[in-house]
Image (tube, rainbow, N blue to C red; front, side, top):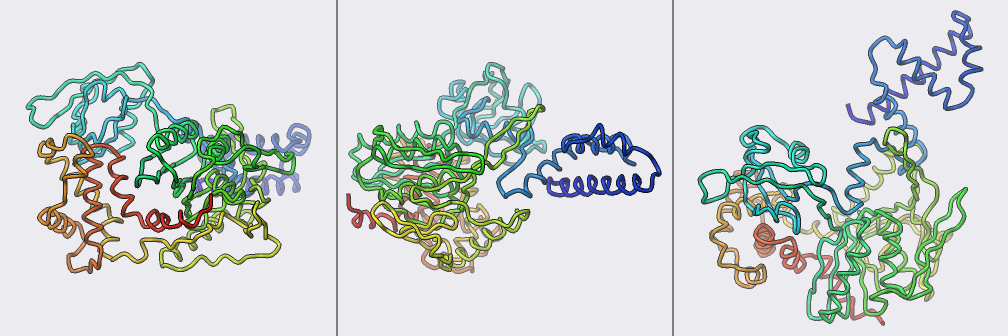
Length: 536
């Protein structure tokens, strides 16, 4: 049963019992009114009484913990869409992502025909130090055969993750070696990175893609900027597309890299919270130089803080599509059992005074998210964003440009959703994961034939997808439900380059995928000419 159903049933149970108890008390069939009025005379006591009554007298066995979780979650959802409840397990999983590390053996893997296949060992992680390589098959874990048996991603994570210092014994099947190779891997701290990629697009243009605002994001961005500046970067595309947010402090520190001392970055204010301002320092590494920030409909919260600060301070240009509109500030409070409540206590405001949060119907989180889904669907169809500007929500930037509040950050230059004009054949290859699966399998079966490419750079320079390999992909796609007679339009060259990018990723690292794909990324390519319109 999913959480929303559990919550709904929990609410029905709670309120039904309250009504029944009220009716019984009025009819004096049992006399508990005195006990109730004296012992349960506060809100918390009322809830405790209801749960105790369910636990003791309900007709069927009840999981009180599950009922309580569902009730709390539903109760918070009635306040606003972003006040939420996290179980102990959910909190731990999310915290690992935001903290920038977790404990385990450090591999990227994929399950192929019920076998765990290593895509890449994580850099500087325990597995790569132990000698595990891309393409290895994990056949046994702690002497138990795991290959050829039904297994899913959660099973693999459960078996391989563990506390730092503990050991796991693996039996590895490697191409060209008859017997299993035994490995004993000592688990360690595995770093996760929020800067997915950084590099030079051309001789003067740098690029940084940030996926979230984790505990290490500001330092990662700073390290990327140092590297790019050494490569003589003069202008930067800072990509926040798909970045759903994270820590406020990290958003502040990242924004500080681009703004000169004294500029307001963001402020928060709530019913019982005074205005709290965050001001830029003189520590930024890229306070001058042309800047473009890429945003889209999935950029939210901390991403909106950064893009809003750049826009209101007239720092560079914001390009893309209107952001999500998540401007409510949550404060986390731990509960005794290790779970947590994140309660909205304030709102974010950009330097000009715009509230980032878009309107929401109280007590209707589904309506709030459905509104976003409808907006996204219209963009997929190639329709222009139809937000209505209200004069009461008109604000001005530092240089006097007009910007509007009312939900999300509107870009200075709006770009259409790039996939809407792609061919049906291309869209099916991407949406069904056909290209990725084919290229992964191709690399996996032909790894030895790529040994002549000693580095990723050499591969990118010398490798081209042949017509025969392209036809093999087409045949594979047809077997997997993508018919050859579907029109391809002008997308063949794009498909060939994406295949090359996926093969590079499978052989080397993610950065080689991005170095190819950025030249196919419509948003990036459409943004580049706008550097000429930015005045430093």
